[in-house]
Image 1 (tube, rainbow, N blue to C red):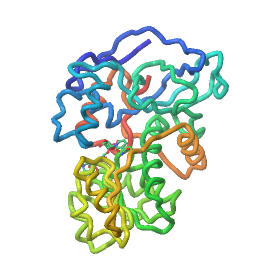
Image 2: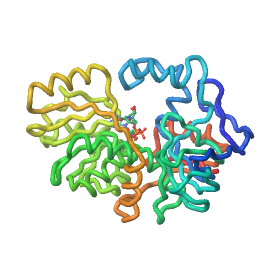
Image 3: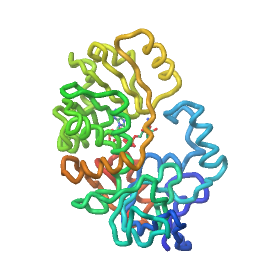
Length: 331
Ligand SMILES: NC(=O)c1ccc[n+]([C@@H]2O[C@H](COP(=O)([O-])OP(=O)(O)OC[C@H]3O[C@@H](n4cnc5c(N)ncnc54)[C@H](OP(=O)(O)O)[C@@H]3O)[C@@H](O)[C@H]2O)c1
């Protein structure tokens, strides 16, 4: 089967097309013929992991050390990237009950990756579900990552109907899902913050207001928010405190140890809070997302598609920072 392999860390050109053996499912596994795999933040980080300076790794140092064990110190342990995919079940193991050959599915493999290939085997109880029937494989492929992360994080902050939520990084994978879930599922009034090229895209997701961070600093607009979601964690509690409503929450989705300490401090002081949370998606979350998409309340936008063999080009495109919606490899 066609596979994109990388055997050393580095720029997009470390990604190479290679023929590898087609896997066969174990008794509890589903063999998926992958039709679309979305290029996400994790792929870019994992591809160049050794060369990313500690300061640019936007989670606590301990996570970086653990990730180095997971990914490999001098060269990648797992040589196939890709963790958010859509495809068709080709075959199931003898004990599989939930899926049948011919069904269209989508899923998320997390750090196990492995989806930059024509075939992938995953356990039937992993994060895999039937694909929303009205979506193409390309549209569906980015959803399992972005939407399950956004759902998990929004549930952790107990968001209420009518609350005012601002999402900084609203055009990315997690941010775009957070805008849609916060407005269409939780009933919040959502403001999205993104760069100029993402404005129309974020508006179409359902944001009541969109702010271009290159032109306007939302902390100076006099508005207050019950929840500030900061996807890349580039802001700070001190910067956003005045923009938080009484008992408002600052939720940095990416956070360093200093923000964890602020979370502890604000948890005992009462009033405005910092909450650093990790989403821990599961199959039930993805099934919920699938139903929600099937009701057509949630959308997925594909910015660009590239054939699998052009994975290096797709990575260069994502790294250039111009994507609005997902960038998808098709196999
Ligand atoms: N807490 C958790 O459980 C959890 C789980 C998964 C991932 N993460 C973290 O989430 C992050 C990746 O999120 P993602 O996959 O959504 O990334 P993504 O798809 O790359 O999106 C990030 C977005 O941030 C925007 N952005 C860049 N600079 C900005 C700025 N100065 N102000 C406002 N927006 C800016 C970019 O849009 P523009 O083009 O508009 O600038 C981009 O669309 C990583 O840091 C990862 O560690 C956390």
